[in-house]
Image (cartoon, rainbow, N blue to C red; front, top):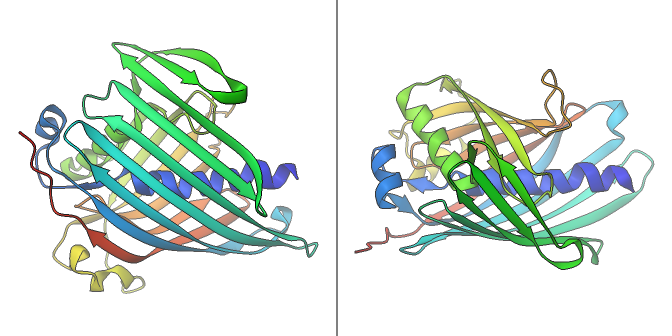
Length: 282
């Protein structure tokens, strides 16, 4: 079913990827963190997902799932691993289940990025993507492996996922309202994408405070609301492919996430969080 492939593959990826990309950071200034590779702290998190809104044109009746995410650090780079599992029901009474397993590794000098993703639909292999990218100056070379093996070259000021995540958190801390970057993640095999971000002051309204009981997300920690839009090469400037809004905490963790696909919205809530001890590298 093309609808499942095009929309829910993106859902599984975006839900996992941006939570994973905005990993835990200490209060070290952004430039120092980039230069030294310090200030990053690993963590493990679980998120629950459910359908919040759906227009009749979406044909979606229900959706729920879970994301298990882990971020780890060594002295040379950062690793992410996340597993996503969700079930869905359509208005025509059909249903299904998708699982996604993703791993990435990015060096702290942002020069190399490895990526791998495998997706299954109802237990049967749907697709997989594996490869790596090398970034130097104003050019990125991507090497895809497997059945779709090929090389791609992209020119311009391109960020890898971790550097983009660092810039987003630095943007929030600096009180900068807007940013726009070209980012390569490789997992959707669509080249680079433009990601725009707006950061807003967090307003306490008493409506959502689920994460505040967690020690790592205490009431005294700074937090912001962020709105992020994703534009592929085929997207017009007026309309994004999809958008995400979330609460971003000062340690880099996100919660109260809304994934907006224009005809339906999926909510993602943090249900468990374990922070790792900081790594000390020479």
